[in-house]
Length: 270
Image (cartoon, rainbow, N blue to C red; front, side):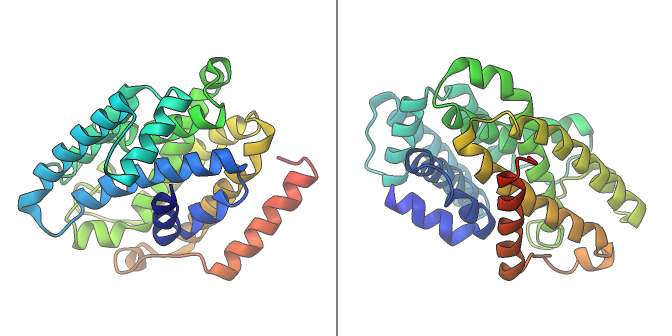
């Protein structure tokens, strides 16, 4: 679990900031989930293309074996397998995630809305659903009632990441995740259409955040506040800048946003 925690704080300042406010049992489980997801993502984004396919298939086999046996010599997968078994996370969610990671080995541009929706389901929505199993502590009624909102939050966060990483994805990885930009013509009008769609996803996700168990609602709301603030900054950033650099929220601004989220949560405005 310690290694998963280190990975979380090393790779995601916004996400790790939110995790500080989870109850200890939930926090450790989320660290384990993040570790599993991060390693898979790093495999498909590595600079050694010959090994990518072999590595991701090996990783898939290792995680399935870890879940079946409850044991793994890989500390990341050992911790994740424990979480899967404890919170009854369905194997089909895990396999859907791996399948989307495999697509990054071959698919460079998503030309249709269905194609990108299928990819986002596996790369983000199922992660939201796995988090929800943890938040609900494996309780089926809670999970079933909040699934649609967890998926919307996963979709919104992923699309924000796509827009924030537009420069890196297009110039370094040669990938494009927005079908509306597949013709190679990037305009402000297209950018704002993308942003409006993301706001719609966030609006629905917020309904679900308000219905989460009380002890996990605040940290999830922090993630919502941080990412919507980033989306607002992306909306104000010219597309000509987005295709040249990665937009970020400063650490000072993040601390202020956490305080703002706490005030709203305390006043029961969430």
